Length: 404
Length: 71
Ligand code: HEM
Ligand code: SF4
Image (cartoon, rainbow over all chains, first blue to last red; front, top):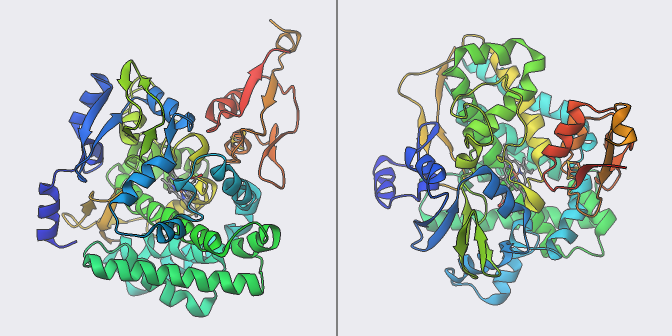
C-alpha cells in the first residue's frame, strides 16, 4: 500500500476492533471491554454494528449459530455489490463461512476428514521441505531480506498448492497470482480481475480433479462426494481454502517472528527448546489475534448479550483481540509469555465455524518458526523498516526487512 | 462423588453430532481421544484417569462436543 493510500484509509477511521498500535489493540477497545462490554460501533462501511468484547460473550455468540446467523450477514454485505442473484449464488457456493446449519454442516462434514491430525502428519515432510527450500534461498541470497516476500508469503501458499494438488508446472503462476491477490496497492479493478483469474484457475483444477481424481484434497472430495458436490461448490471450496489459509498463516509467520525478535528471551526459548514450540505458537496466536473479528453475524431474533438488548436483524461483530486479552479469562493478558501453555484462546474462532485449517496452520507454524530461528540465530530486524498493515480483515505486516 | 471419580477416573461423553472435527482433543490427550475416518471424535477409553490433559481437552473443544459427566 502506498503512503498516501495508507493515510487516506486511516482517515476513514477503522472501527475500534480493527485499530492497533503495532502489536497492541488500541486502549479504547480494552476500555469498551472492561466497561460497557457490548457497544454500538460505526464501521468503515458506514453501517453500525454491535461489538462484543469479552471472552465469555464472544464464546456465547460463536456457540449459537441459530441466534447469530452467518448467512444473513453475508446476504447484507452482498447487497452492496451489483451482482445478479445467480452470480451471487455462484460466488457463495462452497463458502462455509457464508452458510448456517444445515447447509454448513453438510459441507463441513465432507471437509472434516481432510483436516484430521493424522492427515496433516502426512503433509508434514512436504511442509518441512518447503520451509527448508525457502531458508536455503534466503541464505544463498544473503541479507537483507524481506521476510514477508521471501518466507512468510510463499511458504503457506505452496502448502496450499500441496493440499489442493496444484501441478508443479502451474506453481509459479499460482504464486504470482496469490501474491497479487493480497497486494493492497493494486487498483480495485485490477484486484477484481486477479480475483476472477484465481477463481478461473480453481475451476481448471476442479475440471482436472473430476476427470482424474488424485490423492490431494480435491481428488478425495471428487472420489467420495462427487455426486453430492456441484462444480461451483468444489471451485468455491478451493478458493475458500486459499483465501482463508494463505494470508492468515503468512501474517502469523511475519508478525510472530517480529514479536519474538522484540522479546529476545522468548525467542531464545522457541529456538532452543523443541518442547516449547507448541505452547509458544498458541500464545502467539492469542497475543497477536490477527483475525480482528471473523465474519459478521446477524441476529435472527431479539436477544441479549451480557445484559445488553440486541434487536432482531442487527449485526454483531466479535472482537477477537479484546476477548483474547480479557483479564477475566487469563492472567496478565497483555504480556506475551510463550511458556504459559494456556488453552481456550479464540484466535481460530469458536463453535461451528472454528477454523477448519487450524491443524494445518499449527503444523506450519510449529515447523517454520524454529526452522527460521535456528537457521539464522543472529536474525534481527532492520530498525524502522517493519510496516504494519491494518486496513484488512487480517492484521499483519506489509514488509519486514531482516538481516542476520 | 461418583464411583469413577473415587478411584481417580472420570467419565467422558463425546457428542459426535456436535463435533466439528477440529481435533483439539486429540492434540490435548491422544491416549483418550481419536478421530475416525470422518474426522469425528471417538473415545479410546470412556473412563480415563482423571488428568489435566482430559480436562484441557474438554474445556478446549471448540464445538462443545465434550463433557465430563457423572456415571
Ligand atoms: C494462523 C492461521 C489461521 C488463522 C488465525 C485462522 C483463523 C480463522 C478464524 C478466526 C476463523 C473463523 C471465522 C469466523 O468465525 O467468522 C477461520 C475459519 C476458517 N479457516 Fe482459518 N485460520 C488460519 C489458517 C487457516 C488455514 C491454513 C486454512 C485452510 C487451508 C483455513 C481455513 C479456514 C476455513 C475453511 C474456515 C471456515 C470454516 C467454517 O466456516 O466452518 N484457515 N479461520
Ligand atoms: S475437540 Fe471437540 S470438535 Fe474437535 S474433534 Fe474433539 S470433540 Fe470434535
